Length: 343
Image (cartoon, helix red, strand yellow):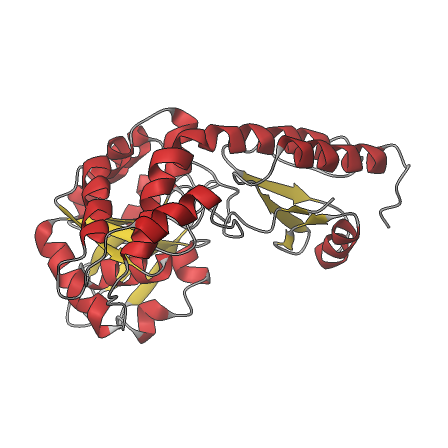
């Protein structure tokens, strides 16, 4: 049996999702008459409580055009030191947006307001002023950790005190919402801009949606076109996102339960440590090279990525069945008992 835990991006569209894509009414999104894209954007506006939204091909584009529409070249922005925006978007903050970055530390994704105050710069003849705070929820490199709505409210207050705006990389915000049983707008009411991925927990093949004020999204649409992200009959892709919102979003807590059970199994092995996951991402710290460990796991049918000098990451999603979870846990049990070699 094969269990693909490399990411929640590896899901395939279900037959029902494909049917929704094929049957979607279509137009031309660049010309402003794509009905299915407009329906998706309307759903995101309702979920987030924002004024406007725009469908984009990827989470990276959602983040970058969202940030571009809130800043000017030469501005300084605050980004958490392990953030996706900093690690996995190929220097776009500098190359595309001409921004300088000051990174701030966090406690497994939890942000200290005093740290932000210390990092914030005042504009002068010599110094770029800080204009934007970037957050991530859930936080990928911190194991899917959650910023609660209360955390967001406190950080919004700090941002207001500092005179900066707030962009949220909400690629897995749906997971935070599901884990806490809180509506999306409880989180997004405290930010100026949010990018939400459809191709992770929701299982769509492509796409993200950026939401914000009407003026902000109008500027973001210009940036989308500038970067080649204007799409035509993109309702076929938007329909997959609508299906995910309606049918898969309500089931995300099941992914979280599977992740917790798998983490508990990993902790049965002497010398291994898996912190209890808050959502669908499981981290494993182990005393051997994670590249070697990932090869061994793969030989046993469990696929995951190395994620640091001694760390691996496993990500659960809606296409990991109960049977696959049972198999993965049984493999770990055999390793713990020495019935399966892991050296």
